[in-house]
Image 1 (spheres, one colour):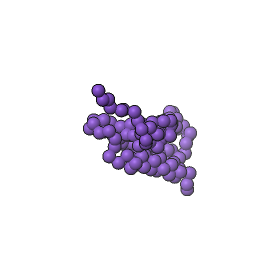
Image 2: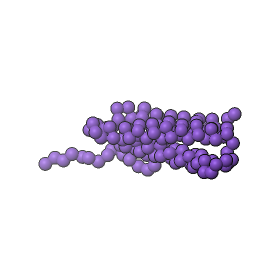
Image 3: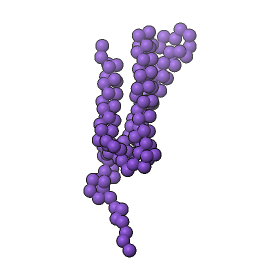
Image 4: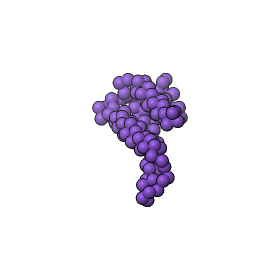
Length: 134
């Protein structure tokens, strides 16, 4: 009787090893997980900003922050919450779950998906850098 060889060979075997495969691999689950993990890191950052904002509002006439830094933190909190958490989390879930629902073995354009995740990281870096530019 013949049996099918299910062992991973070639490129698939190289992708299945270590953190490098998780950070730069083209498997839809690793791309989706990486995107969701980044989104949750930015959720924590937005939560820290919210905690700083709440210290200002803890008591009446508390001057923990001046008006301009308070408004800047409020803007960054909203931006982090929406553009750096909510949208990437949904995109990451889409990367991870849609191929499973369709029964596809991989994403249609896996390298483009990895590129979009790293482009998201670069955009987040530029957004954070704008806080330090006058």
